[in-house]
Length: 244
Ligand code: NDP
Image 1: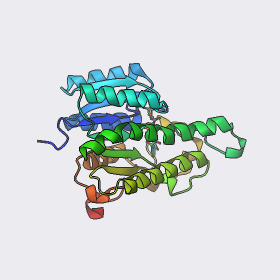
Image 2: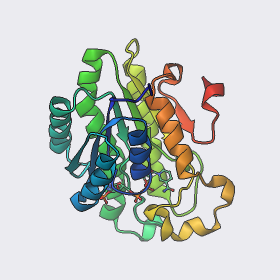
Image 3: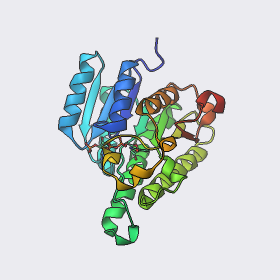
Image 4: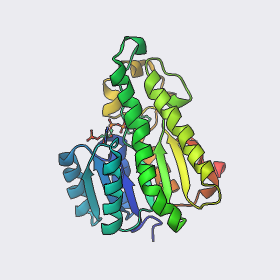
């Protein structure tokens, strides 16, 4: 039987792009899914598709920056589907691209809110139960831009660097616990996020990641076999078996 069969996986930002691809991939492995995004219609469509394949799915329309919503989603998910085995903090935005000094400050800060506050809210909501059970896996969606400066993506890069440091610091704080927390770092991916971003057009092919490779890496981490990599920042291109 597949390692993920009947495991309860909560995925934020599941309605489109990478989150949707991961949802479809993990559904195919038999996972029970709790999916969030702000768009209920998109979630309904995905739920119908996945339910047809025989998978249990619950959806929640919510903004990741709302901590009260994060707490009630985690609570509802645990009481209806069961304890959360895997939390995937995927929801994110690129924010305004270009010269930061010419952009609206509140717009820039929104990127920090969604990309940092969002994952923090869901970790804060889900970790207590994981710690009580001494089991659980958290996968935070980082970005290669947090270690490689792409011109025009300063705030986005800063948000993903902050998330990566938050991730490994929380893991260090949980020393001795079996809970595993990772940052997965894709290169650029063809999704709504990148389709209109002006700075991406000159970025060479070596900086791009296939969406299927991200899903496969997430599946491996969610399967629980890579505890030795706890707290790590893992590029999608890394050979995970070699790292472990
Ligand atoms: P998309 O723009 O295609 O999808 C973003 C997802 O996040 C959607 O499901 C969207 O749903 C959801 N979302 C956005 N804001 C919020 C919010 N405030 N509350 C709840 N959900 C929200 O992006 P990608 O699939 O490309 O990106 C997914 C993740 O991968 C992000 O964290 C991104 O930073 C990261 N990443 C992307 C790369 C790329 O090149 N595309 C490269 C490296 C990392 P809805 O709009 O329905 O709310």
